[in-house]
Amino acid sequence: MNRKPYIVGIGGTSRPNSSSELALRQVLQDLEGMGAQVELFTGHALSKLPIYGDEVDAHDDLRESFIKALREADGVVISSPCYHGGVSGLIKNALDYVEDMRNDPRVYLDGRVVGVIACAYGNQGVGTVLNQLRQIVHALRGWPTPIGVGINSLEVRFTGDECSDESIRKQIKLMAKQLVQFVPRMTEATA
Image 1: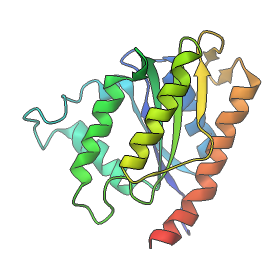
Image 2: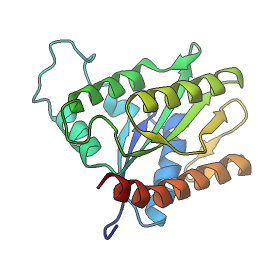
Image 3: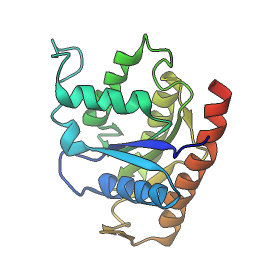
Image 4: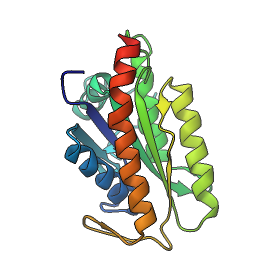
């Protein structure tokens, strides 16, 4: 691969600076430090997408830029809060828009490396959301990184570029490393 890997980050809540958004920002910051080009679609931005399938205007600027970014992406990072034991509706709705890529030469997320992050207020929902995100990525033909990051936001805090838990910080860095290591391999394999 002779160019910088292009990684798209999707995540957060409709509330800016949620734990899931700040964790996603840290992964993207690490990716930039490793030479990747990144683009971020926060939960706040994604909250402006209509429910997928509802007589959606095919020429909506946000929809077009979101799908264009995913089409060009070498990799993706998805960060979801846990709502009532599952992936948030906001993140699921954004991922439903990948259906617009069903007839592309690279269908859905085919050949793309995907990192997943789950944030929950307590331990129970973390594993459930990580598992759901991995299942969604598989259904969309993506390749989840070996490490998925589960964050108990009851115990772990983010302030700016800092994470209060060193082990979570190391996991975030490892995910970024896996993304930049695996992207060239996947690009070669699908060429």
